[in-house]
Amino acid sequence: MRLIRRTAAAAVLTVTCIAAAACSPGTALPAGDRAGDDRTGTLQVWLYNEAGNAAKEAVIGKAVAEFQGSHQGVTVNVSYIDTDASARAAKMKGAFNDPNSAPDLVEFGNTDLPGYVAAGGLADIGADLDRWKEKGDLDPAIARTAVLDGKTYGLPWWVGVRALYFRTDLFTEAGLTPPKSYDELVAANQKIHAAHPDTFGIAVGGKYTFGALPFVWDAGGDIATKEGGTFKAAINSSASQAGIKRYTDLFGENGCPAQQCADLTGGKTVDLFAAGKSAMAILPNSSRSKVDAGAVKGRYGVVPLPGEKAGSIAPAFGGGNNLGVMKAAKHRTLAVEFAELLAGPGYQEQMYDAMGNLPTLKSVNDKVAAKDAFLKPFTDTIAAGTRFVPLDQAWAQIDAQAVVPTMLQQVVTGKADVAKASGDAATQITSAFAAH
Image (cartoon, rainbow, N blue to C red; front, side):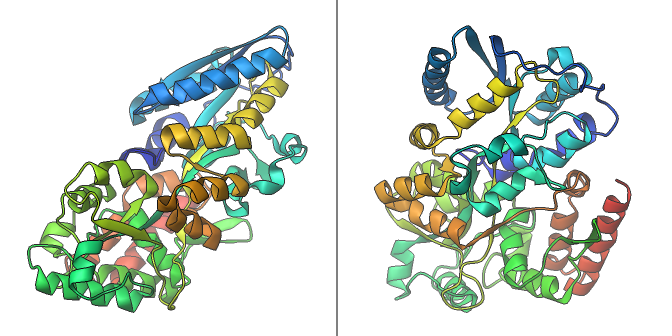
């Protein structure tokens, strides 16, 4: 879901709605015999209605005019749908259950993919994209977020990642440079907090899944691994436990006190940093506008979140949105062609200028980073390799049950050690995969 100008908790991770209500297998009516490929008529498109949507609509309007100009007899009708979890779930459930009400092309969060496929709602467009001239420019890790069981169900449209925001004034005062390793991050956290007891060295949250996972991935761990076509929990592996410990060690009296930080979400860490109450925070590129509107405007910088090894970059979650063709589409070819236009270099750059969306095409990422130095830590993070949640509909259940946040909170509050908390989480994760 959207990372741009909204928090991860509110936007990127609204997948729970889909799994619980809209994406359960068996709800969709058979669509194969209903689908068509008319080359004229009205192409129905659903895109997300977002904060600052007027800027998005202006870019989409240009794309519509261009597409209609090159496709005689075609009208593109774009509807902007609510991104609220429950409203979006109801909308998509209606489209899955009644193909006649479904659009031809839809924007969807990349974490929604398994549920949408399980519901029979999306068409495999892999063969179509094989002929797309820009395919080789797609970042491979981002491209994989649209692939399930070897089939491609979407075209990645934009991506968002997190990096380390830091207070330049506090770092200068302490004689510190931006951290380039986990140990330097810990040292900066402790030194600044010691000098400024009312300021957190780093804002981290017990409910901040995508702030914690880079530490797990950097240590060589994962939420789950796939063995013989089936996912199995890996969050309790020795590598995962090492990553969990690195993250949870940032809590406490020398950093982010548990009593104040155990319940923090990703969105709340943005608020703390923007208000000047923290020296560091792990935030997405989309947090820029909120930070600039806060007390630390002009007094912060951004670097990639460092890994354990000096000079390394911890893998970030590659959140973002895809464009998918509905299985019930009446204008399949037109839908693919319009998706390719929107996701092409010209409109990816325009969407960045309008909404701050990071492009999924490497060449466009390089171009926008060259004209905006703020983006370099994020594009460097993407180049270093992003990671993703398990591409399985069980992830929505795992996310809805707050398995990872509960594990983190158990450790942070001292209710369980890393081994016990990760073991309990692994049991729940394995159970979720077994149920699907």
